[in-house]
Image (cartoon, rainbow, N blue to C red; front, side, top):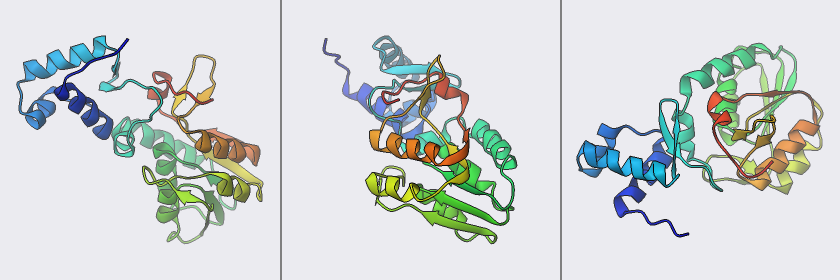
Length: 220
């Protein structure tokens, strides 16, 4: 069955994917239509299952494409900070770790600025940029092409680089968690790198906000 939506509704979906959340007044001003029109559009998008109601607003219904990087940074920001702070507390000085792709894993990196004697290996160029100036940390970054959408590095070169190490900890994220506790993401290359990270770490810490229990992604 073909799903037909208006040009304005398509713009609403694009806006939510880019910004991460929706406010009726903000959309009304952005698209220069009345709030009542926006509410009708949103209700139709809910009925078509193109939008997903979540705590604090709505996100684009998951299919084969993740939300934009900017949207993911905004969503659940306070919760991600709390998770990241606690995860950083679990990491002792003079340890080694992987940090993979994700906005929550990047938050963990922000809380490592007081650690000493730590080796951080990452396939996330944002993490590397954040940590290389920090005294007391040695930072290594995998090889491979940098993904333009979020600064992630994926592919066989990244996997081969990771194979050279056995670290104390891995800090990983995911895009979705199902009822059985299995982890899912949107990019097969990213998943393969994450599997390599898990296989070459003595302990694995998953950092993920509660929204991931409401979302769906196709790759286990």
